[in-house]
Amino acid sequence: QNPTRCVVITTAPSQFHSHSTMFALSSPACSFAVGTRVPAKRVVPVKATATPVSAALKAGDKIRVKESVVVYHVPKTKGAATELLGMEGEVASRADDLNGVYISANLEVRIKLLVPDDPKEKTFLTHVKEDEVELI
Image 1 (tube, rainbow, N blue to C red):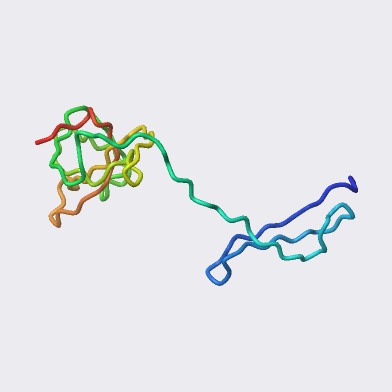
Image 2 (cartoon, helix red, strand yellow):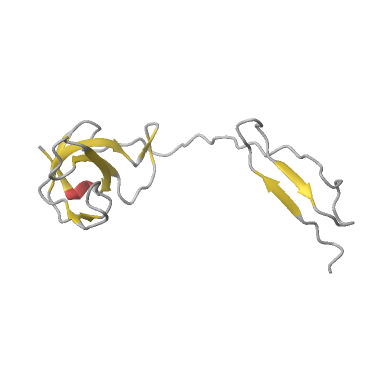
């Protein structure tokens, strides 16, 4: 065994404690006692200083899918492939917009579409590229 190794077990913050707990198992190399409670590192949000978002599609716009897009997460289809070509819906939000600042996103438009053949007219969300949909 390596006497300079320090083994630490970390527990995540819970609903009762706002900090995580670290426990040293046992080693002379550890600079803290066995069972010592160490406060978690604070994560400080960083302000983005990138360019503002300028997009053709905004949340609430009515759209139609104009490219062949296949998804597998449509409710009531049990994971079967569903073609979205020609379906109409609306833009739910933008994935490339973080509080008004542009961030990179592969599928930047989050759209809400009706579940096919559903009498209750339930909807589902999916992400698509901006050039795969058109404004109606």
